[in-house]
Image (cartoon, rainbow, N blue to C red):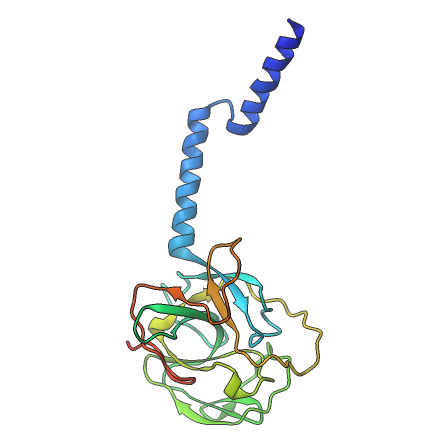
Length: 232
């Protein structure tokens, strides 16, 4: 009898620890938690895995982060914001990939680079997030009323091998949730030639290839570097 009592007590406390003293209330809470998680990760936070070196040292290759889709509900992207930008590589379908880049140019401004310095309307800008040497030189590009200029933080890469340019406001999905770490200890030169991309996906999934695509319902048209890929 004593052994049976101990066994019954074990299973009782195991049930209390797993589903509580009131199973129905626990199940309701679990259902609410699952529903809230679905809403958050479907409509608010977009999990991404960074792929590439063009945002070093602020965001490292293969780091996991989130894009907050509600960041610009009551405002517009500002200079210095790190954002997710929807791009396309397929003219015949809605297959797309996501760029993780920093906004440096706002609508109506003229953006250029001289001796590695960012110029906005001809005025050099302070960029404290830059840690690597750059010698970029690019002629000015005047942005339209709905255009933003994006670029990565690792401008030690040759500009022709670093995806940067103009995006329409509709292409900007949201702002990165967590700021990147700045513990880069390498040299002033990053040899990897590929631009940095972030591939949307669920946490725990293997990262997609560098040229990975993510299906988004809205159709897209391809664009060259420095050109917007999605019309308004």
